[in-house]
Image 1 (tube, protein in one colour):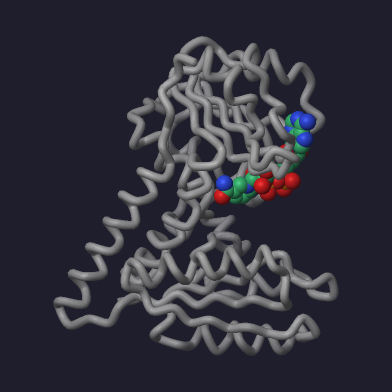
Image 2 (tube, rainbow, N blue to C red):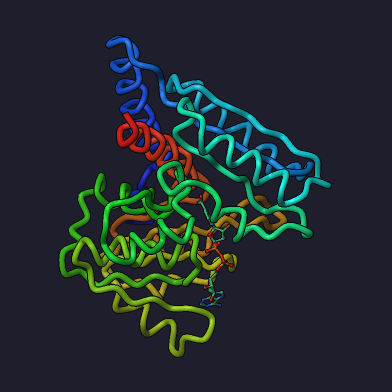
Length: 282
Ligand code: NAD
């Protein structure tokens, strides 16, 4: 293996440290700390772990956490009431509705009721529209984390060929918009793209966000490219990404591992978004 490893844990710790310093300074000047509210509906064990991790991260940087738990039988009106209460609460800067929701609920319409000013996940239609128009707003956390990793690694995006595998509203599409803002030439690939390998081979920066274990092979990577693996796939032996890591590392100049690459960045960027939402409201 010749590629440099991009250490997402290290970068995430640095971002969290910066947020914690900013909160200390706010509190020292007599201001209230930022507040992040989570809403979890039902008892999905994976969601419970994600939400617990977010609260732990909140506490560590000095945010106030507001946890809201609803039974899996909760109605859209009941959840809407909680969201409206949090929208109106001046101590709450960010609201996070943990997905997936139980199957009788419509995630899209509930997410829409979150005030765009508190949409720290960056997933409401208003936030998506602002991003697409290149206007100020809160951006989705995982794509923000990818850009942060590229910046801290010193990757020059200006005019570079970026190929993104995956066109989801959560990762691929918003990442493409963020990278266009940075003057990259962006190609988005998806499950119907023809000659995927040939397209990937053109990439100076190759981002995989497909959810297919080790789809990207070593010979899909241009010599000296930067490879960012967003995928998290559970297989027999544990977690793997969307990139065949060992093989890709033979060609790449730098590469993110799974776990320990993009994963830790998502919560770090959620904290930064909450601080930004606080800044806009105060
Ligand atoms: P998604 O299922 O919503 O979208 C997958 C995309 O990949 C689709 O656009 C689809 O067209 C494309 N695709 C699927 N198979 C393909 C193939 N064979 N060739 C080319 N394109 C193909 O998934 P998502 O929510 O965007 O997540 C993608 C991956 O990223 C998953 O593994 C997910 O677990 C992971 N993820 C990680 C984080 C993180 O914090 N690190 C956050 C979000 C998602």
